[in-house]
Amino acid sequence: MRKSNITRNSFYFAAGMFIFLLMAACQPQPAADEAETRDSEMTESSAEDMGQKPWVLNIEEATVNNQFYREAKWTGDYMQMVLMSLKPGEVINLELHNDIDQFIRIEQGEARVLMGETKENLLFDETVSDDWAIFIPAGYWHEVRNTGNTDLKLYTIYTPAEHASGTRHETYEEAEAHGHDHDHDHDH
Image 1 (cartoon, rainbow, N blue to C red):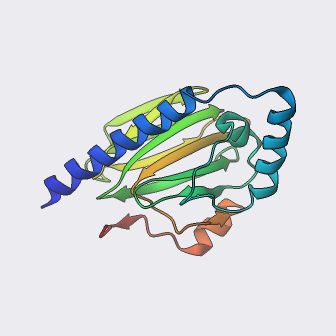
Image 2: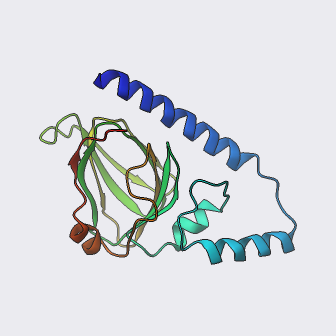
């Protein structure tokens, strides 16, 4: 049962990433006044989760400008995009998603990534920075720590969604107080 869920979710992840990247690459470049209008509309609506409807954004700009520790920006039935900003020394705590594949893209900063099949055996240990991507398979424990002197700016894509639509944690402390369960199973 676990293998079929991982295989199915891996398919959803790969298909979601392909569609996401294809949509990003195929967007026509608008005239300057159209881009200005679209950017102002994006800013006006950026306080809400734009999931369940078509949406485009300059993801690098949105990620670098994000000031919140965690904010779900697009939540669909099978995929979710979340922006994150970690202050120096902050961490995405050690966690496990049994039925979720996760993609992380670092837009700015430096981080240490640990992964392993058990939380006592994190054999995968890499340092990443601007423009690096991290692929986390379902069933792997993982932790991401900001090791730099500036804020770590990243976006992450979960397949399927990990957080409730519209989740916003302004600080690491707020996220911890919210009580996010780091050792969990999902029944999607």
